[in-house]
Image (cartoon, rainbow, N blue to C red):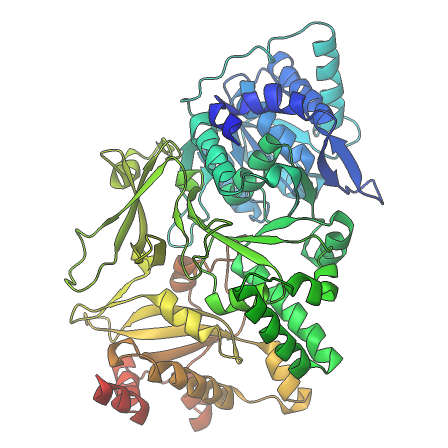
Length: 620
């Protein structure tokens, strides 16, 4: 799509691209007032954007102001974003999953003067109003009529459209500075508190064009939106790219409706995170198990995979019934935000789905690299997309035999900086390069392989680097383990030595299948069961990578809306009563009322002396 290379700003999408596709369906959506899906055309979306922008300028005096948006995925959310960014002020997308105190915090940090929200967020917004500026403007996306509490979204758009019809062209004619700060996005904060990322129209337009070079034919497709819209991965690669290309966006009602919505929307592709792909695979495997034909299907899958290797791909036809569960048209699965297990890719591609993987960050708008439709680069995140340069900085690498270093990026997609944080900006923007904080290397084909976050790396006393993500990938394959977080634990408060620790959650469904409700294993037995499984992973590792400390978490990990574990929250807010550890198990065994104050290094020594680790050491 060479024409997307000439986009000067997001406003060109509205004024040029929308006119080209005016009678095409832009959005398929079922909102609270409708039992059936609505089909909303591009010309209607353009009219609503211009109406909202005009009203915000003329009646609400919001020119140049920061305006927040929060709520479920909807065309109203998109209209708000585009209206603000294309002539009103700075748009501030917020995570709909945030608690009240965090919504308040980000509204104050962003200097927002207005907030557009869905009715489902009404109570939270009302609860924090007294702590927000007195002149704050409130707009409810789903409210029927405006009142003292909030303005009604549809009503003010109607008034704005009337102003446009009466000749008011101030908003429509508003010039756009493509280099100016126009979008403020807060990072998800998996390893630290969130930062405010400042983006421009140039940043986003560069990424739209990059996407079009990876998947040039997707303007004729329908995608289904399932990831939260405040995340730049979903908004740029799905909503902005598809609306610039003239595609159709079907909006899922929520994860519990996803299979039903697949059948109604019939998407050609979706954007997903690994946790969602894993659920899809589990659903498929559960259905196969219920048929009692697992061996037959496995044989058919092997034969079909064999044919695909010689250019005859019959997998979609062979597994048509599985395809029907996903609407029948689903060809491509885009996966990002976290590493995807190559074995999972192999499983899903065996049923006729094609994977595209990418790598990016909020600070890069987000896309940096991606695999293509033509090249199989499984196990990597592909090559740099059009307009982006990637290098590996080895200056901090102390291992002469390793080619792993920090991934650094240059291109028009790189952010302007962090909002009101010059020090943090200087740390990551150096001589035109953005230092991502991610570690990786290039394989022999020139594809980028991401090994993990530099802040997560465990450094042993003898200088060895251990990447938690590598161990987590192995742990998460164990049937007893649902999720895991590997980190470095100090042997004592005064010691510099660290051991490899794993905090995990148990797969409760697996336990239910194996045990009756009144016969569930005790904490002691469960701890031993899990550690017996972990020993299997330890056998595959050199000794310094062996997991030597186990914590079983009784509740779920706290996560971002893209299903990444918030490591810093987990480690800073550890509740001992919520963990099953060797100490807690021994406490129960000995019937002591107080927790046994046993030094961690005693446990580490005990585990170091295990036969499994001794055997691993002999092999080195």
